Image (cartoon, rainbow, N blue to C red; front, side, top):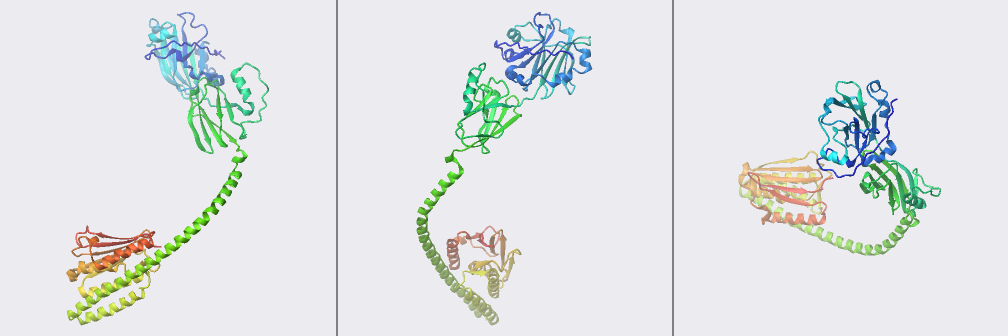
Length: 543
């Protein structure tokens, strides 16, 4: 097996210009030992961003190096002067060819291959680029061939080969592998052994007393008296922005992803409250690799759940005793007031209903008088018969606030037949099939003044040409009654002074005061081409 040389760093901190091929001082350069001693020596220089070189401590070698050198093509074509390095970030690895400049570049070729996919990134080609003046100045090296920057996915490697034009043997090779790196906690310190941590931090070379910490990462339970927790990472970290961590307490985020607080290889948590914690750590260079650890901080006795429950229970009982008397007195007063209010509303509703019946009787007798005046004795008799039945049903339901929906529809049918005898109009009643006519109720004769307006102001002048359409609909839990006619319409029914309409509005107002959770509303649709539509909506009225 060919020998793979170890790392060599050639670092410079001389400022470079923005337009340089690379900032030489930001990279560590690796090359074969002694290759830069003479200007004419041809040797590859591999430049890798040095910010994350600290991870080489854990993964300086790559299994891909060992696999690669086993191939026959490696043994047959390559010599021993090869440089192999690992890197961890997504930045490109840069390649320079020492000893080759614009004068002799035509004698050399280079090729770039990805391994293990064997993908050819750059076929054998001539050298056309060279180091710029800023790179020459910052590196202190003569003009060199610049072969470009290349990268591969994590777990893959880039192989740079150089040969003389027309000669198969490869005279120089560089391997750079992109390796995975994941945070790992190698040790923890708590308040019990914090002094050992601080001593090692200040004097890394000094001997310290034996550490007999009783805490481990597995099932890490800390008492409430512990105020320090230090996690030691598996890398030599020199900048705080190389490490980020996120902290959760009781599954709630208390610290989002942020850079570490220290330019060092540890994370130091202090002054945390009791709870269950999860700390998630990642290296900025490979943020997709996250390591999570859990630990528990136990509460003090006065922070325990049972103590809080005890204090809370005592407080609640004491407060309840104070509030109970106050609420009892207030509730009694409120009950008395509500009872009085409801009694008053019921009386007012009964009074309105009592006013409504005489109003209806007056209109019905006026219709009978009209038939008699027209010498229509048969029609008057039929009208009187239907009117007697309607009055009996009205008187029967007079003491009730609500009437079953089927009875209301029956009275509505009787009323329309009575008025039809007088004016000769036609009518339709359409009831939603989903409505339960026997389980649902309706405020007694709430519709009557609206239907009377449709007859009197709508179809009466039209006689046989008049049409009234009644729709009883169900929308979710709402009951909607629509009464439409094809008359001349009422310009502004909301401001009308009709006695029946006024009583209806007053009755609706009282119903809404009595049952605000089931409001009733009355609206008029004047956008029809002919006639008027009254819409009575009973919200949350249906079972």
